Length: 91
Image 1: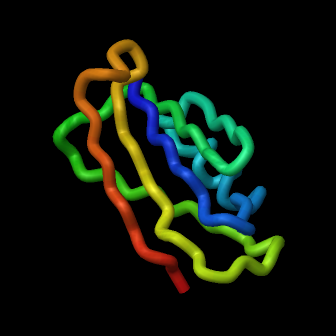
Image 2: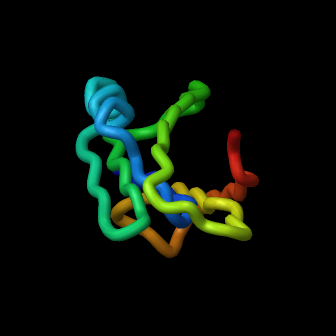
């Protein structure tokens, strides 16, 4: 099992529509939201490219937003393979 861990931008939350669209994907086993972090549990990953779109809604105005971070790792070996990506503030 693979986990995608997304640290949300301050003042933003994932929309219910976004959650529903992710849950309808066959490889997504479960989605958890804890504080400002979204955890997406996947059955597995292979060599095929995958795209996940997470729609966020701004609920609090925050100045000087910092980039969100995304980590991908193996559930059973979290210290093993880990891919970190950092994206700037989106539009």
